[in-house]
Amino acid sequence: MSGQGFRPVRDSGERIMVAIDGVEHEVPVGMSVLAALLCADAVADGRVIPPDWFCGIGQCQRCRVRINGREAAACQTPARPGDVIETRENWSG
Image (cartoon, helix red, strand yellow):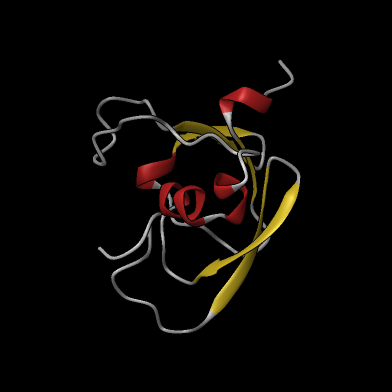
């Protein structure tokens, strides 16, 4: 990988909008919520803190987030248009 950050291996050029911790982000179609978290501009400026490590197969549960009000493993959930994603740091209770 060149440069800093995360980038998808395949990118069709199509984009969807998701809200991560209250901020709208445009992400490639077909990526997981975890990949969307890692690609978000908010990671670069410190507003979103993705998990520091994760298994990527749903076993460790380190990537648990709330998606549209329901808890889910971000690595096993595809991002969908209009998803509202809350990271643990921003859960209201």
